Length: 552
Image (cartoon, rainbow, N blue to C red):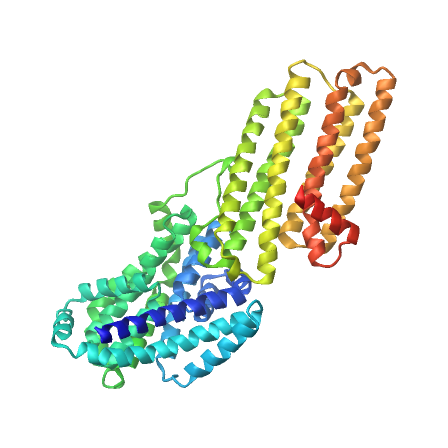
């Protein structure tokens, strides 16, 4: 029992070390890795190369799969390009298994010591996150040593040898067990390294070890499919396409396990190297051989998982991928994309509001009021999604972005509420009583509305890019809008003095409307405050104003 516990502890340490490295690298380089993936989609070969590099860093083809799937779901890359990335990702994780199979035990104490020092002394900085990566690498190397030490006594028992003996000549069972282990461990890399260590200790025969390696490859594909089971169709198409490639590869390679042993064993006597090189050869041959089939597999997957058609304005959350929550930087990016989708719906409401005013369209008014429910639902979904992101896993910049997204979505939700209230007033005080604004009053409302739409679009750009100059321009627009609102209120009073009939009938609505438009503009322009404050470009009075508006 003691030897079994030692083995289980060593396996758990290996899996945990892999997790630390993956999450640590994503926290340090997450944004850069995403940019590399997106910019490498020019053709399938550069996409595959980027998949190799990214996966070699994060040490998980599953993590690369989730990132790539998210890009497809956001419409940033095409499905064939994403499948090409996954061909490279498989090679990347195989290369890491070759590296870790070498005798690097002397690095384990060094990595753990330096990593712990960095992590404790500077926990919230980039250096602290690098320390986390070093701790993970050290634990992986230490775990491999412990696996070798624990397997010897455990597998010397007659009962265990009888169990392992039952695996001989049953490739299907070996593949099934290997796939199950990869899913349980959440890492095909950890399983391949474990199998290699067991083979070097003569715990499992080499042919059984190779069957388990095939299963681990298949398991990584199944794991990605299971992880994205509740995601959007576009995301699931990537993981399903990747699984199709793995099924084809395993089906072709399984009958030739014996051929590999006959041809390679005379030249490579170390069992560990036989296993990891087989893992590498399998992924290189399959990836190169199948990279030309990415378009065909993409068409097949699209037929198997067709994407439903929905009107753009009424779509529910598109980018809040639950599988990305384990990668905080990616989850933050998804939330930002969904916040922009919420702003698109608000823009639709804002543009439609003017058409209601001009055309007295009650049907359109009802549709726009219904859109406010969509804005509210998106706000709730984004807020709930963000609360599920571990704040401890976020760096300083990501934490600031988390706050910016919450602030942006709150402002969009409040703008939606104001627009709904304005439309109700227009229905009650203009359309139903069959009243109209004066020609001059209509011109004023149109000009204010045009400025509102332009400012909303500018605020979306500021939120997306964080451009300080655009943020300053947004605050300047706030002052101009306030001056216009005062001027138009004065001119309206002048028309009342002139006894203009239309102005008298709609006076209350006109004053309320331009006041509400000013309030909408204030919510739009408040998006600039966090950007300018973080850049140190916000005057002290503006800082107080921004904090007061956040509390209101």
